[in-house]
Image 1 (cartoon, helix red, strand yellow):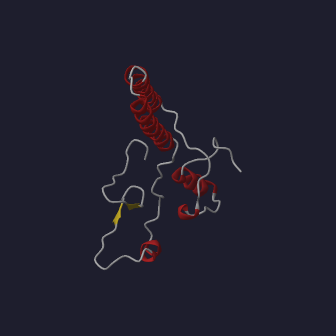
Image 2 (cartoon, rainbow, N blue to C red):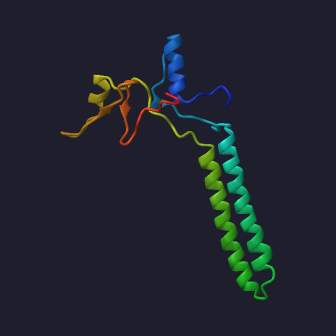
Image 3 (tube, rainbow, N blue to C red):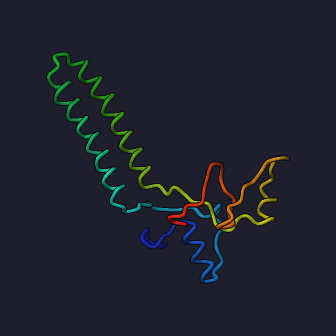
Length: 146
């Protein structure tokens, strides 16, 4: 099994397969495993700021609102609810940061593939003229990363 460092996104993997003429596993059959993470400075800074805001909210709720309160039941109930929601928010954010957003496979706009989609009569399928791929609704070809 390859390490996460050697794994590429589906589009990059298929491009590499096309260049080396190795048989590619269709994207629908490819099940990614492990963690996916892009190490860009802006994303890391935004993620750190988000986590710091949640931890600051934890500090404020705990030390400013709950500990000075004289009502123990109020403190326990609100502390439990807030900590549960904060944990779920951080877990969801972490999972979103480390999940591959996916990509449209290149070159899938062949006549055979479009016929295999079993489209409804009158349904329109758009094709990107640059990469010969079926375009999802409201999608455009990215001129930055191709």
